[in-house]
Image (cartoon, rainbow, N blue to C red; front, side):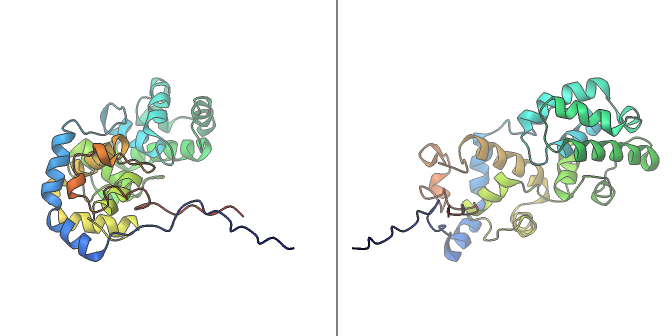
Length: 248
């Protein structure tokens, strides 16, 4: 007798989706829902430790594909040695890479090259000062739209968009504020929903909620202060996340 083969287990069930009707309803109530989140996290802020716009810029560049917690362990040692644009511009990228690697930061060679390179351009083009426009910021090595808007919002209070990181992407989809999956499209949806004066704090608030309640895995819907307004409540784990591949 030939035994039938058991089906291979999948890592996760098919992704749930928020329907268009739910998105329409959630978007109508987006501002009151956000007001409730702001009340839950009145102290929401950028959690990268820094002093001044230059250290913020460097910290955000270093935070790519790693955690703020790790960056905050690295930057005290980095800024003790290279506290400003002139000192970092004069640094040997290999020395900077060794310093980053010694503190456990990944991609240390590329990140060292970026922060030394951007420091040199700050000296050459901007008198050592961090520029205040998106166009000038994204011209610096390692600086994309997201990094630029963190700096513009936190350091200068003039963001030109909404910072869309993994937390903001996930929550925007779960809350029904966007039916898109790509950061650029999600950012456009959020910019259309909320006035410019909310853009900076909106991202900090969503990031706080994502780190403290609406986790990627096992979101704490029972403890969430906006579960009544969330179309994904109690079925949110597979929403706003990429499906895991099944093991062959």
